[in-house]
Image (cartoon, rainbow, N blue to C red; front, side, top):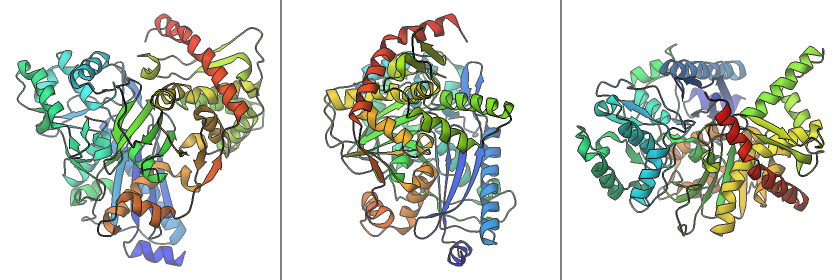
Length: 532
């Protein structure tokens, strides 16, 4: 405790803050990269005029509350104030659309990754680039606004993501990490910058509109991990910490997306490694040795924070419906006079799911709060279906929802592993789905038919990952790569707790998925019958 207090008071601690879909979380790490204090703020997106969004007020109030709780945690644990830091890193949910005019005014409400309203643009750009452009990418949102004739497009002078916006506001620097940038627009593997040929193609596509900008003029500057990304300004320090105790001048690392921070947090930035982040959304990242043989709409081509090529399967929906059911059971527990703490409730229900039938006994769930492009749906309706003779037990019910949280992901991964024959030695899991020991981990191993490792730090997830990226920027040795830094200085020989796939679970998940695919017609019918 005394050593940690000294680290904090001497300004050697490093801070990482990540804006997730349901929580903003801060993690403070010491000189050994260990978390020593945390803070969190719960928030939720809202559906405004058919668009999933968060307001600027939500963003800044949430950040200040999160940081304030971190400060309190430091004060309560160590009896000292947080006044200076060695470095700070910000990350956020990837993709989306934040467009600003020349005065820095947000032109339209933030359009998050969750929106599936850019199908026409994504298809057109995929064809024009011969490169898969998912609906949630920033460029798809921009081109859809062009196709829709939205008036604000002519006024755009800067286009960025949530993490890029926060970083810009706090430092004045219009920069972005390459991993996050790869979810805005395709990256050139050689230059580690936006693909200039594709930029020229885009500019030609919109030339007839006569906009007073070119694409390169409105995109942020791309930086790789370890590069200088600016410092916290006086105004930025006051915005982050209204109490005024945090000093300006702290260096910030390039802002990254939650995919890149997940890779850092699981030591999976090297070729042949991969990770799965499972929370409100779920995505798998596999670092590639070679390019894929074909363009697959189910697979995104992005990069690590240091610019290596990554195949990504991203699904919009993961634990939201699962959480809703757990909350419902929590209400029942309270009504019965036996209330349970949140973690206890999850533990009981998740562990009970392991006793369910391997194929869920004829129960099928769709966790689609929003659209799911991997399975071809632009909108979603949470749906639970069962056969009249199904074994409707609590264990089967919970197991079906755990399977549902990873079912769409498995659809995409089957393409990567079975069609592209990509090899991966091990997958690292992190995020909320893995907090109950052995449950989400075993389900993922069954879905992927591959060993899955979960580290002790898995619960810290992205905030810890971006703190590691910030630490790398200020502590790396000359010519020391991010992979080398993580392997030698952070993780050492730690491999985490590894679960091998159970053949019976693999067969059960495959049987469940076969029914899941066939019954997607019911999900599509629900979308048609229950319009927003």
